[in-house]
Every structure is written in structure tokens, then in C-alpha cells.
Length: 307
Image (cartoon, rainbow, N blue to C red; front, side):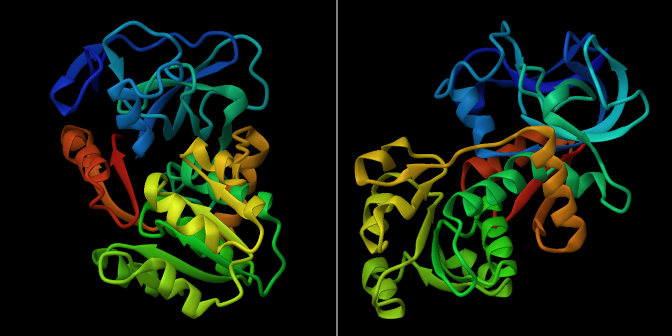
């Protein structure tokens, strides 16, 4: 029996609650882990709100929040290869187990060992932000010296994309609110403050011939503002807004398998992929952790330290 933070029905923060649940039993292709650190992502409150129903494994209410975690394997289900009891691992709770919890189940094909030298705190940020950054830049496939616009550079995924892009010798322009400027510029981004500048005009002044690629993390009207700034509309890659197809762009092609997790971990060890962790909360403070992300007040990754 362990404490978890979840929700009893779809809705806003008012539906969230702490409750106790028995340790889950790992099914076929799953591992049970003792959670050390859980990552906090916008997807968590989207799931709670019922906006992306179907990604929660179809489990009954109450459901546990959280999609990514790092911890120690306690037990294995059937047909699990490459992971053993006692291993330090990180990965996705894709079958609805939730990660804001003392114990949870992870999908074994979407879980990898934490390499020596990488902390559980950093590892817990890689399943979403790390692999997304790798995927979107691989999909663009731009050569060194190319220029990209990261629309929404201030959040956890945006800063991770920017850091990895700079490591690939790309020139990075980023958009964000005033509060995100300092953090973005600290990693080498040329920043455009959308609250104080006309984004299109500022971007065209910096890159008159258009961007080689655009990574959109904001969606909505903001995506439609920046999309025309790309030299080739197919090189507009959106992470959250499927309407990018209507603009001639593409949605990110996600690869969340063990191989990509291991690749992200190697990049983190090498310093090429360096998630910026701006807040670490205990499980008892999970409401505040998620509220920070849901309200857009974070300029990096937020994690919950459980163990």
C-alpha cells in the first residue's frame, strides 16, 4: 500500500486528490518500480482534464497522475527482457499506472536502465522532454549552421530542444514571455519576447530569408503566426498541435522505445542534452508541482522527488 496523487473524475485541479492504493502487479511486458523521481509534464493535466482520453490505459477512476519516472525495479511481469529486479531504470507509465506514486508499473519496452553517472533526477526528465528533443531535431535533419525558431522556448521541452540544437551547431532563435528571457539566453538562444515585440517582424529582421526549421511548442494562434516564417512549410514541426498539417507542416514523429531512451541518456551523460530542472517537489507537494506547469510558470523541468 502506498500513497499516490491522482484524480477521481475528469476536470480541473479541484478533482485531484491523495489516496492510498495497493502496489500494482506488473502485467505482461511491465515492471513494478519503487519510484524515486517522477517528471511533471503538461500532458499530465491534459489527461486529467479528459482532453486526451485513451492514453491512460483505460483504467477506472481514481487514476494516478504522471507519465514518466525513474526508480528501482521491484518485480517483473512476463515477457520482460533486458531489465532485472534491482536495476535503476527510467521510462514511461504508458499503461495507466501513473507516476506520482511510491510504486508504479512501467512499460518494459519503453523503459531503460539508468547509466552509471546519470542521476535519477535527470533520468526522470528524459522520457518526455529528452526524447521529444531528439525526435524533432532528427525529423528536421538540418545541417550545422542552419537556423531554427523554437516557438515556446521557455518550457522544459523548449529549453531541451534549444540546448540540443545548439549542441548540433544550429543557430537558435526562441520565442517566449518576458519571464523566460534570462533562462533562454543563458543557454545561447537569441530571444524574442512575444509580450513586448511583434514576433513576425522581429523574426524577419533577424532572419530575413526565413528559417530553415521551426519547432512549435505553443500551438494555436501562435503556431499560425510563426509558420509562414519557414522557408519550407514541411520544416514546421509541431509537438502539440495537429493543425500544423493544415499549414503544410508536420507533427513530431515520436519514438519512445528503449533505444531512444538509451540514446537520450547517453546524450545527457555527454552534456549534449542537458535538461534544466527548475523545481524539485516532494510527493506531498505534488499539487503545487503540477500547478506550476499547468499555469505556465516554469522555465524548465519540474520533478517530484518521491523516495
